[in-house]
Image (cartoon, rainbow, N blue to C red):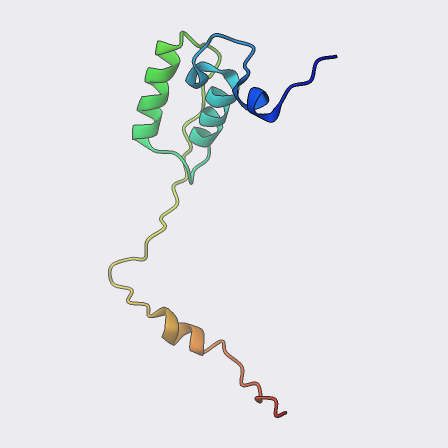
Length: 96
């Protein structure tokens, strides 16, 4: 049984494929594209280019139909400090 040092383990690979073409990379990328919160047209385009360049098959994905908006509407002005104050409870300050 041979001993592998940590440095060797981190750099040792069982394939000559570029890291971008390995299944672990392409599969993770495919899963991200199927997640509504992670999907982007730009990412999908890059993924298509990568799978083509790698001659990789079997990485089809379903484009999500639900999109999440992480920004507030323009007409909604929200001051976090003000809104958080309403959730604060008054706790007496302990005296020594």
